[in-house]
Image 1 (tube, one colour):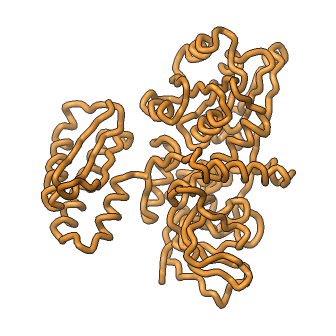
Image 2 (cartoon, helix red, strand yellow):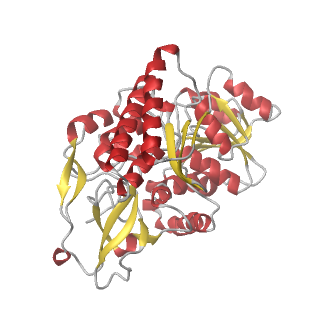
Image 3 (tube, one colour):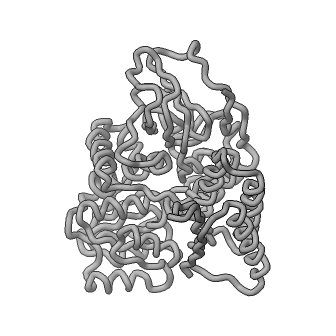
Length: 450
């Protein structure tokens, strides 16, 4: 069966340039077993994460530079379509793929097999069982995010129960993973971000306190710690946030450098490099620790096994569940990558409306009028979100009721919209009403979180 894959034909000048000029969706035939080895496995990809690293790699800004043409998608999950004679993998198994062993961040023959595709050929060693009750969408957001959080907080930062950690960029996928891991080991979490709306979600995910990084935010941190300062800083942001953080830590604190999202082009000399004042580091007796998970693992492979085992154990036990913000069909890969670049969502980039559309489309009992009404509703909602802002985030879900099928709809944008958008909102309402009628739904609930 022919599928599709995204191909990056050459590295872009910047991630957005790579998305617009260098990335295309191409037909992809199902890999032929005759050309594969005895330990090769063909994965039918069900879901692939859209990660920050995927963006940086597309323009050669990540420390591991891919060789074009290649298929992006560091992390993905799916089902085993075919397995070689020596693979010891069951066909039909639900699995996730180890990004250290397959995909664009791996080394060797499987670097080109990224997850933005219908199929991927991977070595049997890269195939891991889907842990616990995780969905494909959740599983493909597991390893990179939570191994990074574990390496920084536990292996490098020695975070202990009862300590207070300041997590910057907490609404991002790696930042939210750090919130989850910190809570699992019994730490108190102060989470920061740029918007109150996203931080409301982070609070719901377990953060003890949330702070918008506006003027005076470091004073809020000091107040929350009784003037003492935090024990650990988990910094994946950089820039001015880093400088202010040094003024709200206790003596002897551990400062974990995980990334530089605020200055993505610093490594190319296009923006000023991140700098930390050595006088404050000295006076406060700080441990400033670089936490490059992949580089550290390449230099010392022995650190991987206990980290991977712990993350998989937490997930299997149901103690760790990645938050999926939105999903996109493969054909909309460019929109998904742009959404990640512009930080439109909390954590990994699942939109329930897309899932609803897919589920209804697969419903063979659905009459053509209902399909047409669904298409109109999706179009009107997209137009509304484009006008008001993508963060409006309308969600939809089909639910079962004692009297039939219903749709629950919600606006998770955490903000209202002005009178100038009322016509667009009215068109959405009419389209949804028509959809409900066509589906024979018995109930609709519209909820907002403004």
